[in-house]
Image (cartoon, rainbow, N blue to C red; front, side, top):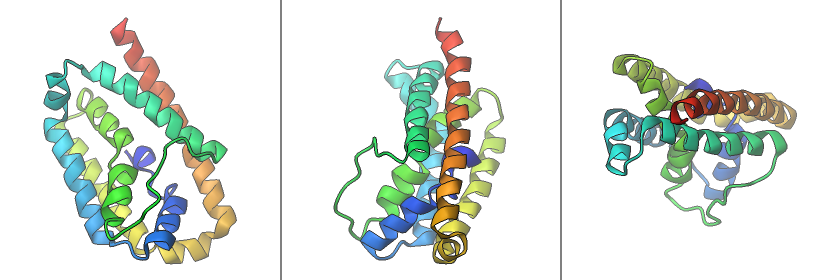
Length: 178
């Protein structure tokens, strides 16, 4: 969950959004992210089942999304278009959703459901949300501490980790489909 949520690797994006929108409400973004992920933990699998999609199909599709997010982080390119207008909702969109609780975390939650008990996944989400809150709350200090070079290195390292997770997610679930 830590590598997929990647709040530390998202620090450059958070700083950019903060510069464009003004202020990010750390607690609000954290609570909305938690609510989205907890809700998806509870009803995500039945929800995708309504569309006739199984966990393996969702996981393979999510692996592609994670793959492209990782490429963005590693190569420094923008594949996903973000809204040019930042308003008072910046804490919710794009920070809480889709940056923190996005396709990658939702795919991971559904994939983890097949391997772990729901309580364990919920504990992982809570631990990650504490870290999310701390990073969001301390983003100005972290920006000064890391500097541009440190932030760039973090983004590349977490990009490679996310790429490896995408490959693992794809290879383990593609076998189920065939």
